[in-house]
Length: 89
Image (cartoon, rainbow, N blue to C red; front, side, top):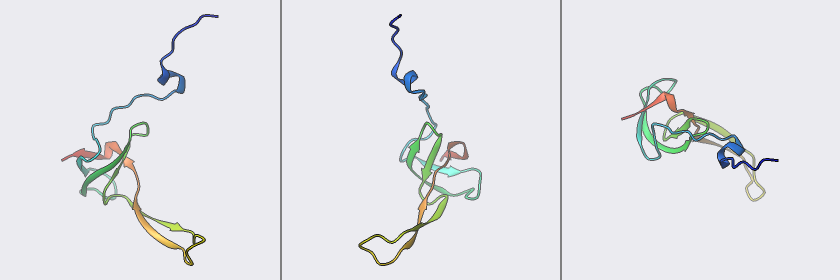
């Protein structure tokens, strides 16, 4: 057996990915349903190359009633979009 040192990122198979946008950057959506909208980057997912932008790609989620609450509800929240669909502004 040969003891070879393998970098930790190669063991897990996760690549380091650098995106052109960071958290708190102001970006403009350049393609898709929300084309032309501007917003602040709330969260970045570098491995998936996706970002969550404030006020963009809003979807409705149906929440089940919890034990303490008597009713379920529908909430609207932002979902990730691909980083190639945004540019810094």
